[in-house]
Structures are given as structure tokens and as C-alpha cells.
Length: 314
Ligand SMILES: *[C@@H]1O[C@H](CO)[C@@H](O)[C@H](O)[C@H]1NC(C)=O
Ligand SMILES: *[C@@H]1O[C@H](CO)[C@@H](O)[C@H](O)[C@H]1NC(C)=O
Ligand SMILES: *[C@@H]1O[C@H](CO)[C@@H](O)[C@H](O)[C@H]1NC(C)=O
Image 1 (cartoon, rainbow, N blue to C red):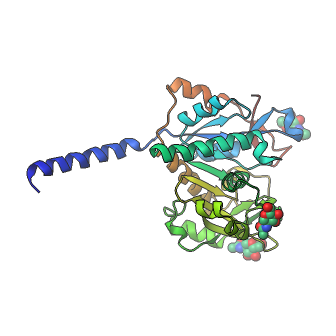
Image 2 (image 1 turned 180 degrees about the vertical axis):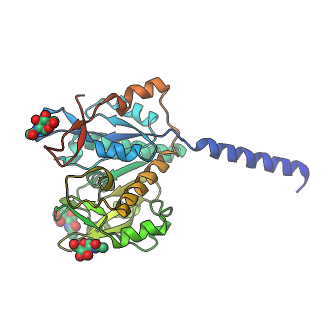
Image 3 (image 1 turned 90 degrees about the vertical axis):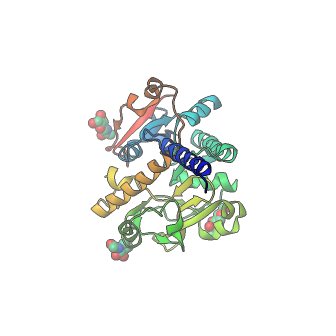
């Protein structure tokens, strides 16, 4: 290599290092979808987010913005362009796709795919429990969920072949993998599940997602417990990684040190994905006006399965 080329080469090398370095966002802000309240939750407000999801993301170094339901499309576009990822939390929503949660979720799912396709713009989407169910419905364009035993239970994961080559688990230390494999550390509380049978029969799903693990419910029915999109930063888990650290009402939740590390692993993973996004609010003051810090969580431990929740009146 002559010197000119050598210099050119090192300049190109240097600039790509600079681009990579500036691409790490160490002030990630993640949106959490709210859900319309029903039953006795309506006394507190029209929409809610269980505070455990907020603490979970905050504990890994992200800030949180609540995503309100039933807002105009411009609001969701604005949130997409300002946030570094979105989490679809668990819960119960009848008529999932038509709910405010489902409609808002669809917009983020579609914007994430479109922007990666158009300009390699990275926007992670994470679905927990109901959120993973929503992801499966959005991708399949229909409901392929099977009614399974809904009893809350902590289960181990049965990993698929090559799962350690996935984005979700490739950074996991052997100790975390071992805990997930051998201990009852993933709290499941869902009536509906995506089975490997229905998954493998649907080309839209098999072309889009890679199954990373399954679990067996208490009746022995196998369901998909974690998956990720091949091409997009889209992830789903049927269990509740946030509960081991932040919810205490259900005796089936494992609060052991190993279980806590599992919670921390998944929180770190989601936030590490958000650090790859460089979307931003226009100013810090604008970010502040949307952050969850503007709201105060309410004690609901005596009337629900959550310790605390945020309520909204959009
Ligand atoms: C497959 O999906 C249908 C809904 O479309 C559901 O009724 C059925 O129980 C599912 N079967 C399995 C084996 O998952
Ligand atoms: C996990 O739960 C099952 C079912 O209750 C039990 O048989 C098993 O011993 C548990 N495993 C551990 C490591 O506690
Ligand atoms: C639950 O706790 C709140 C706050 O302490 C209290 O105001 C409320 O009356 C309690 N509700 C019930 C049903 O016990």
C-alpha cells in the first residue's frame, strides 16, 4: 500500500470509528404503552402502566415516557422520532387489535420496520406477555393464540438449537443461561399462548421470527416463551422478566438472587438495544415535559396484583 492509500485507508477507518462511537446513545428514553383501565382500575384514571415496567427500564439506565392511548397519529409519529424504543407491557385487553393499546402498538411496529427498511434507522420494539401476543397478531395478521392454562407459575426455558447466536441471548453469561434452563425464574401469567404448532404453520411468522425458547405450562402444553425477528429489532417474551425484582403480590414470583439477575439481564438487553437508537426530543425541556417523572405512581397493592401503577387521563 502506498502512503496516499495508506492515509486514505486510515482516515476512512478513523471516521467509521467516530461514527460508531457517536452512534451509542447513553441517554436512552424508552416509551411504555399504556392500557385503557377497566373494572375497579377506572376509579384511578382512564389508562394505566404498572410501575414495575418503569422501574425495570430505569434500573438499566433508561428514562421512560408513557405512551398515551387514543391519540392522533401525529402524536405517535412524534414519539417515534423522539424515543429510542418502545415496550408493550403485559395486561389484559379485550379485542386486542382494536384496543387503544393494540392500535398504538401497530403504529410503532410498522414505523420500526419501515424506518429500518428505508434508512437503517434502528428502533427496538419489545413485547412482554400481552405485548408478545400483540406482536404475533400484527405479524400473522390474525389471532393464532391458543387458550392455555393461565395459572401464574414460574418456569424454566427450553432453549432452541443455536439460541446463543440470537441477539437476545448472545451476550448472556453462562450463569444466566444456566439459571434460565434449570430454575423456575420466568413468571408466566397468561391465558393465551403461541404454540410451536401454530407458529410453524404460519409462513408470515416463520419468515419473520426466530423462536428462541419454549416452556411447558402446568398441563404440559408447550408454548413459545421467547422470540426475536430475524431482520428487525423486534423481540417478544411470554413471561414477565420485570416481576422478579418489582412485584410481590404473587407467591409464584421468584425473588432469589438468581431470579433478580435474570430480571437485570433482560432489562440491560432492552436498554442496550435502545442505546443503538439516536432519535431524540428537540430539547431536554421537551423531553422533561413527556417523561414519566411528571407523574406520581399510586399504591394499588391492596386492590390489584401490582404494587404501584401510573394512571393517565388522556
Ligand atoms: C391455533 O390457533 C387457533 C386460533 O386461530 C386456536 O384456536 C388453536 O387453539 C391453536 N392451536 C394450537 C395447537 O396452537
Ligand atoms: C420447578 O418447578 C417444578 C414444578 O413445580 C418442580 O418440580 C421443580 O423441582 C422446580 N425446579 C427447581 C429447580 O426448583
Ligand atoms: C387501599 O389503600 C389505599 C391507600 O392506602 C386506601 O386509600 C384505600 O382505601 C385502600 N382500599 C381498600 C379497598 O382497602
